[in-house]
Image 1 (tube, one colour):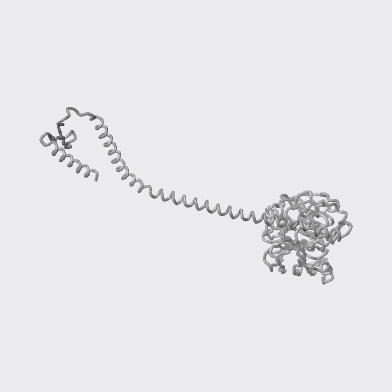
Image 2 (image 1 turned 180 degrees about the horizontal axis):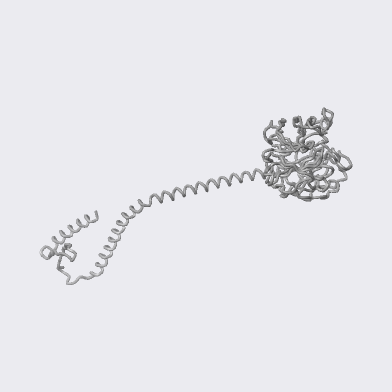
Amino acid sequence: MWLQVSLFSLSGLLLSIQTQAQDRASLHRSNDPSGHCHYTFTVASPQESSCPGSDREMDGVLSRLTLLEALVSRLLAGVDKGTITGVGANREEGLQEAYSQVTGERNQLQQDKERLNRQIQELQRRLAELSQEAESLRQKPCQQTLTSVGTQHENRPANDPAYDFGNSGYQEMKAEVTEISASHVFHEGSHNFTGCGELVSVGDPVSHRKADSITGKYGVWMQDPEPQGPQYTNNTVWRIDAVRRDVRHLFAYEDMDQFSRGFPMKVLVLPEPVESTGATVYRGSLYYQRRRSRTLIRYDLASEYLASRMDLPHAGFHGQHPYSWGGYTDIDLAVDEQGLWAIYSTSKARGAIVISQLNPESLEVKKTWETNIKKNTVANAFMVCGRLYTVASYTVPNTTINFAFDTATGVGQAVSVPFKNKYSYNSMVDYNHAQRKLYAWDNFHMVTYDIRLGRASHGRS
């Protein structure tokens, strides 16, 4: 198009020159060295003998030619650019897709951040509500307790942690109380057989308290079947909340009624932190596993003194061989008619349950048995009359006690005794031979089960 316009302009110029100059113009035609034809027009000026300003005009022509060359170069470059664009289309498309993916991930992360912020705000709101509730409990129920239970509470110092409900380290949980007569709780005359024997049946769970704080999700509670002194009796109830990073507080209640009401008479601060829900109370001492170790500790309750400590040889700990529900339940201490036991596993046993009878004073191992049932396949275990019993599930509402191992014979066998997880998360099951009951912690609920024993087939008394 540009060349055509230039030719038309050249033709007009020729006609103009011919009209104005007539016979004063001349036309010459010749080939240049490259063989192209050139036309030269010569027109004499009728008035001027010389050409003033010819240099300026030539400079203007050269400028215009330079611009023309630049325009042609840009047009030619546009053709090459189209070719290059076609070749790189796939690469540009891939970059666009990657950019879209990164943008989507960034948006997702932003949404996750907003969701977490909302959860944090909700937790902060809940914490504020719990603090207000604790303050209310501190001001009202505790004062009533001080005036109703007698001189023992009246003489307690005002800064006793047992009544510092505003302190989260000692926060007492709100309870739902199920009223049960004392005769029902402690009555043993209904058992047809009072000696040692095989487990025949387990009754329905009876709830004594429900905690509504997250610290009550799971824990351990018990009564001493063989108390040793007047300070604490077989009516004293002990409780440890296990949902904390550093578990050291042991709550003591005068009796089951005060336990159900949520009024501790004392809070003991343990010298070493507790691991999980495997603790037990026996003959005036608390026995427990030290956090993140295989060390066993005996803590004398009367003197509030660490009486002895001992490593349980080769025992797995802190998640190596727990029960099926987890919770670092590698070492579970138990008590029955024959004494103190440790239920655990070792690398040598390859995760199968190992039972050791312990010296209650020194914590030394007296004798050990290996079973053939994997510890992580059962939800919990307890000892009754020298026999180990395992619970099949911690969540199934109607499960079974599915295995028994007799330390007298060294023989294990499958059994099927119905057992109820009424609240679907049973994290602790222990036996109290004085009450002939199982104590359990089932999803915030602290419950007991009556049990019935039958005579042993091999005649153990």
